[in-house]
Image (cartoon, rainbow, N blue to C red; front, top):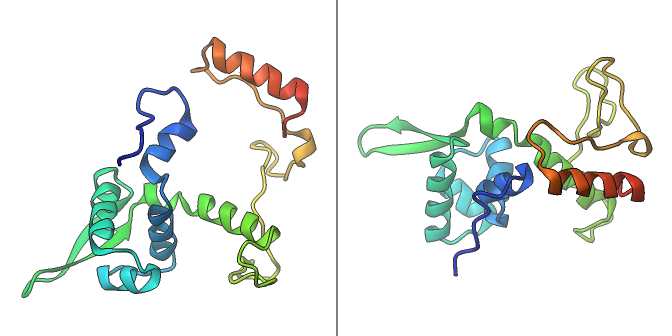
Length: 167
């Protein structure tokens, strides 16, 4: 059964989920971000069924997340690479990994991957950053405002979220 599409819903999260909202897709983005490029490597890393893998790669290619690049002519062989649009998804994967590590969702008690500063070796974490100063802003100070595309429903939700201190 194909999941319901969120097309037409005025929500950036819904639009993103229409493209990357299944677990196989996010694992493929993870593997591509780690440098895997070939079909067999994706299968070996994830255990994804062939038909599912082929469908997800077509889907990601159609949405400009991945590009297919020929690396051999005889016989013809292609590999897959993240586009700039696909590379921007690293933050999504990092956020999921940090959340999974915080709540020990692997059950191992320790992170499998750590993000560190290449110069200092110090740990890094995702943060909301003030666009003008570049300084991290604590979650307690985060407030949502309606964007230029917000309709009345979104405006009402944002008002409720801010009053309730949802974040």
